[in-house]
Length: 79
Image (cartoon, rainbow, N blue to C red; front, side, top):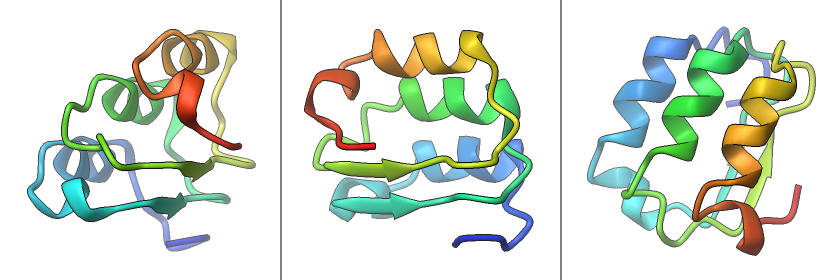
């Protein structure tokens, strides 16, 4: 999904979906996710199998980065 104009609300939908439970890798670089999208991913209980997350050039500030790092995802992800 790299560079596909994936929006913050798309991240919210993905974060709550059943398909998210199957994801091991998620590459969302070059999408306008911002902190709203990062926080949605950070709060997702459905991303329990995720191991790699790429959010390069997604407009995420330190607030979004902290939300991800402090979430249950943070310790097990490679970035």
